Image (tube, rainbow, N blue to C red; front, top):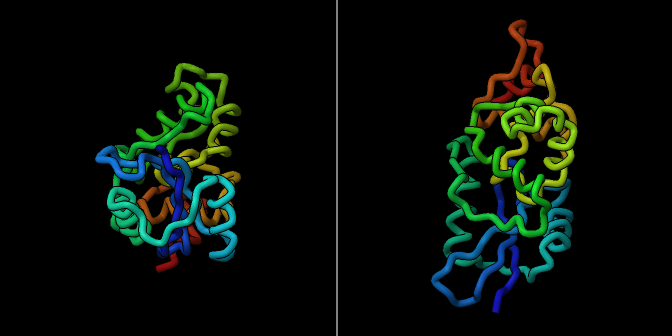
Length: 195
């Protein structure tokens, strides 16, 4: 029987949540179904991931998920990780959104694309707005790194996580992305000054 579960864990950005599903006792690793970036409080993060996952809360995740959590913690602490190997469940998304998420997962840490560039890479050059809408509904941010997609001109624009563009800028700074303007007044200029 497939079980859905989630847990919260601490990171340098605050409490995050991860949800997964899989057979309870199996050698097949569980798949990630949702990821929650920190909300204003740990309680709000818990409420959001509980509502998204429909799973039961656990204190101790299975070893495979515990390994992913350690990688996320390292990543958000500045030891940048590659999450491309993590198996995610996108069954609840449509074919276009799935194509967007698969394309975004290939953007390396420290690099960015614009919505238009991503649409063109997907052979859908007029679909930049649809790309943005799909990314706004991304159920597994960070692992599906929607924060690496910007508006034209390196504009951070909206970001659906708590903290909006500030959170997006912090995540890009952690990854070493360079999107500021030559005069130092770009969207990351203020965040580059912070330790």
